[in-house]
Image (tube, rainbow, N blue to C red; front, side, top):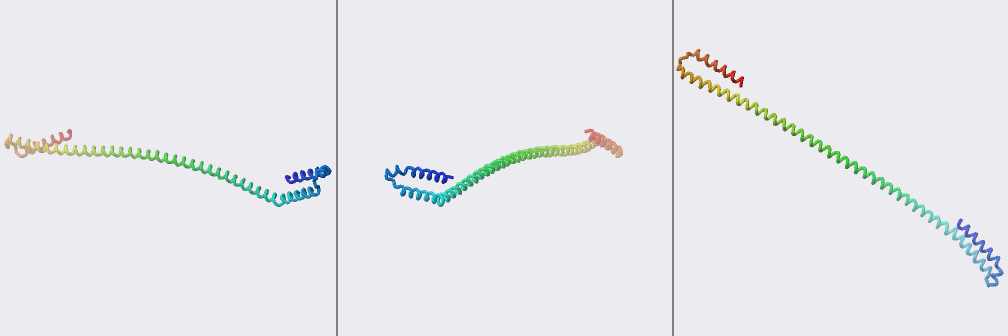
Length: 190
């Protein structure tokens, strides 16, 4: 299209030159030489169009196409980078959320373990107190029984001294059994 326009301009100029031949001859212009130069210039333009312009435009079109492809590829890579960055941000947010969930869960487990330890300590303390009460009661009962036995012995000795052998063995036995029964009933009441 471009070279057609140039060819049309060349033809118009040639026709103008040829029509004004007489005026040019008066000025001393050699039309044959000028026409030969125009034809040579036209052939040069055609040769340049065919052998230089088309390969150069083809090369420029290919280069433009490569540049466009590179730009498209760069845009695609830019979009991929943006998507990847967004995915990384989402994964980081998800990892943060999971970390927070793990922290909350660990705190809950820790609180539960503390509460279980408190309850176990309370049970252990109650168990120790109960055992201590049982041991104290057993020791108290043992001391009371020893005191009663000692009291019975002291009472018998005192009674023997007071009575000075006035009792026979049978009466003596009955008094001891009564005293023991009385001490056993006192034990049950205490």
